[in-house]
Length: 629
Image 1 (cartoon, helix red, strand yellow):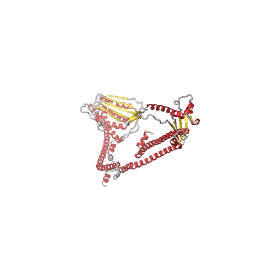
Image 2 (cartoon, helix red, strand yellow; image 1 turned 60 degrees about the vertical axis):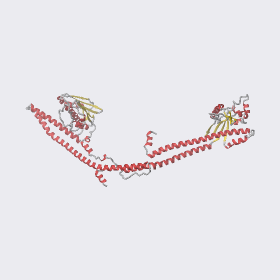
Image 3 (spheres, helix red, strand yellow; image 1 turned 135 degrees about the vertical axis):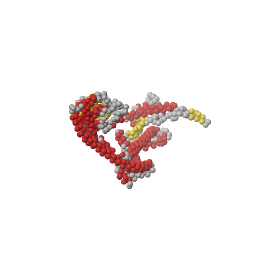
Image 4 (tube, helix red, strand yellow; image 1 turned 90 degrees about the horizontal axis):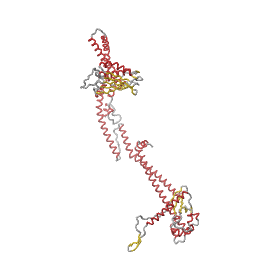
């Protein structure tokens, strides 16, 4: 499972599902672990009991064997056997005496050795006997060493009498006579098999098995060094025990499942009615309030934190209602002021439209007689009888007329742009040719002021797809502006290049420069940058302040931008960035004064805090009527 899945299950579900999942998982792990530990402990007790039963059965086998051989020879032996060994006669089992070595089979006192002494049936059984023999030899050696370390009894005087007292031994009882054993369960035959070595005592070799030892060792080998290694194998049917263990496991599993199920049901009821129900009630009340039903309140009486939460919720709701009432009164006055502002803006818009219409009409009406004046001035200039003074007057008329005509054309262009009636007519043209032509057209003006005009144009392989006339007008306005504000002996640079399918045009000059606070207002209508008081440079030409404004509007119309970098007293550089191939005509009408008026006259009711649905979005008259109810 990925981290996102775990996060979705644990962190992005509802509270009830998370509680059930987390609590159920923890409870399942806890119950599974505890029941598993209890089952293992129970099975361990059963195995321990089987080991104890195996030891007792080994003792019973030895007692019965010696009883059959020595019955009646020793006084009290029969009674002892009956008290200790015959109690196990009711246990159903089989037994065998086993040995590892063929020679050891001759050392047991039995008339039927071939039937009573057995060799291992397989290699696994032989390995068990070898392990037991190794354990027995190691344990016998340890017992001898511990016995030698046991202190001898001392004779001391105790209560005016002599008595033997064994000195205190810090190691306690050093001799451990617990027998070695090994057992396993044969699941195929449903039998419990137990192995335990026979421990020989010294008197066993002398009394019971002396004849057999002498027959086995006629050369007189020491008996103490050659006692046989025999193991008693107990085979006991264990089906009932295994059935009981299986049933116990089933009971434990069923109990665990029932416990988990009951716990999950209890958890569901607790979470559902103690935690989720109050939260659901708070959610329902919140939904009712959001729909405008402000008279509802949270009603939780549990005497705990949920009741405190409901009280805080009701207090917050009351405060919100008070704040809403205050906002209603404020909005009532504010609504009237907004309406007044909207009316003023509409009047301003109408006045601006009248101004634009007036300028357009006046410019159009002025251009007709102005063209006549320019035409007659050309006629007067062609008269040879005029003296020098009269010719100078005629040139002044032509110069002033052309300047006035340029101003009128700028006003008409700006009015056309603001009205959205100016269209883009894209054609293929050579940028280098247009830029070179514009520079040649103004070169006479630069020569009059001794200004160095540098034109750098990249030789493009593909002509541009743009509106040639508007691009030429942008370049002409920038060049005229640079010539106007560059003193004699200055320098003007024009450069165009194509970068990433866009046309980059820059016009730089070494003129008076633009102050930092004027770099934004120079692109506004009828605005010009100011010259610092300490600057000795002055403008040669006055103007309407529409040149850069027209440049910005035309750049936006062509899908580009214009920006300026300048330092006062050192010059300015204008950067124009437009697409090399225009795709569609941008709508600059949205940037006009009309769009700004629409934005200003929008209702401001949505800017205030909303307590519910649509109540505050109603008109002031509706609020007045509703508040009066």
